Image (tube, rainbow, N blue to C red; front, top):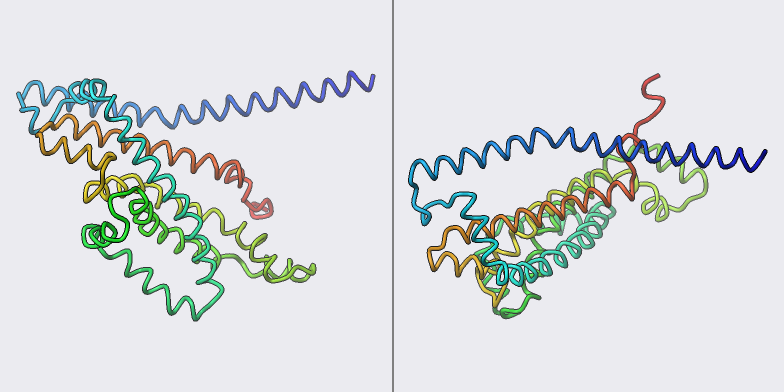
Length: 282
């Protein structure tokens, strides 16, 4: 009897998990329908305009020409993409690490905040084209210089959102933890950071949105290989479809990165509904 009851409970749990999974998939599909329709309409209008208007391909390429060019040059486009992927991914991980650590430091120390935050802000106002030559002098044409550039330009929004997230944590969280015997350091790492994590992820998403574009731009200004060099070669040869091909690849890999960021947030923090206060509705 007990064994059959356990089997029944497991069966009910499995059905519940499967039901939630399909419900989530259906919800995502429903939310994606307007986007898919908009993209299809945009591509159709774009293709029609280029074909009917007899627009030269050197001026703007039709979606079909871009797709054909992407397939035909994939043997060279993919190796270039791999270089930019490595630079952007490593730089992004460093940006997340150092952005959170710097944010914690500036939150904990008013002196450090007053001394370093203006410098951090000033670093973000400098155009990439003005500092890229310095990185070429320091690191040469190797990918290490591009990783540093991506890290520097990617950590600012993460650091800012870390500071703001920690400052927005209600005081009663710390009071409860300290009353239970926790130290200030433990409270910071296990309570405040957990409560501020949603806002920190907001900064991570902002940073991830332009990571690969930054890497490609840095390559364009000076590198041996990568999507930036590939773009430069396409521009020099006036092959407009290839420029769109590289742009499409950057958009796709950025989208994949954003999906991974959202997935990691879901795995680490759970759905946003878990953060709602059940007593708030009462």
